[in-house]
Amino acid sequence: MNVVLLMSDEHNPFFSSCYGHPLIQTPQMSAMAAEGTLFRNAYCPSPLCHPSRSAFLTGHRVHELQTYSNCNVNLDGRAPTYGAELSKQGVYTAYIGKTDIHAPSHQLGFDEMMLAGDRKQPGDTNFVRRPLNIREDADQRSGKFGPKDGAYAKDLRCIDTAVSWIQTKGTQLEQPWVLTVNITSPHFPTYTTQELWDRYPQGEDLSPYDGDSWESSRHPYAMDLKAHFKTALFPEAHKRGIRRGYLACITFVDQQIGRLREAIALNGLAASTDFIYTSDHGDMMGKFGMWWKCSLYEDSVRIPCLAVGPSFGPGGQVVDTPVDLLDVQAALFKAAGATQPPDRKGTALQDIMPNDPERMIFAEYHGHGTRSGAYMVRKGDWKLIWYAEAPHQLFHLASDPDELTNVYSQQLEKAQELEAELRAICDPEAENERAHLFQEEQRRILESQGIHV
Image (cartoon, rainbow, N blue to C red; front, side, top):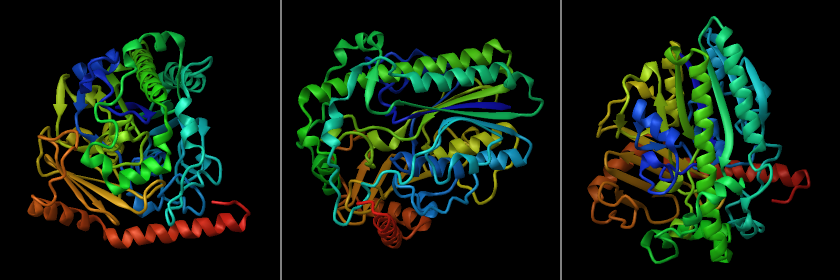
């Protein structure tokens, strides 16, 4: 098989029709679910761009790569990407758009790089956590939404390039190929077109769990993030506008899914090409008074994952077993008939059973806005968030999908079971301190260059 993979940026899956949103217009995602497979419980490796994308492209955990934050100073950069590994095995690999990972685009090993979007050095310098950095301009971001000329210009260049590539090179190659396409929507700022803005006058609502009334909204790490981003200063009108713009941006993403699928079909490639849609992380969208990502709560750490094509079988399938971006990466090897290197994490999406209560998914966060590291383990209906410097949380997602009630103290045996799964992956205390030491070295390097962090 060939594969076209579209990755958006910061798409909370609950904001899409196929995941149950009552208002948003995402007919292409719904068509993918009807014709292919919907992965209902998909997660990112870390709810932040640089860590999540680095893990996805290499098949390694964030703590293994030490890509803890959006600062890209002093990174190793040697872990090979799936583009390089597939190319070695005779699969042509092409990549369009945002990279933002552990190495610059020219070192990633893809056969072809187009419109590469590396994060400039030194990246985000607001990563300091001891003491906790407060992002000085964060509250000013809240007003960046609504109609704007050229709102999607960069994304449209990426999609136009992908459509042209499918029409030309994709139809001519005599070897299997994998095309990765990246767009930045619906990542903030949520600027959009007038037409899409006008579709959602009802979209200027607030999260039903806005504010600090909920137990989860008052957790120390949640309070850290709200302080870091100065969310208390967001005017209500801005909150409503961000949410309306977000709906519009996701409908734009949906339209680009349609364009890519149409290009595959019109060029006679449907019988030989899989199409996968996913994102690098989610967005809290005001839940618990929190905005953007950086949290291991569901709205931030969950992602959409939809797949359609010959290697995914008949349509209308729903997989409830938890999966993550490492499994998406493994799916590329499976579809292309290549062998996944043994040191890479992830099981191909095509091989995951619909309901496996024993499968465990792991995520972690060491980036800006929280005092220390945190780890997530999801297994069956249970989810543990283990915090290095705050009370742990345990949620039963089947009965409490919005994570309103921490049952850690009532379910100690289950909590210990999930903590054992965590410790089978890493020593959380040791990895937390290792991350702090690494970031202290990053700070030392930056300050020696006259860059204040």
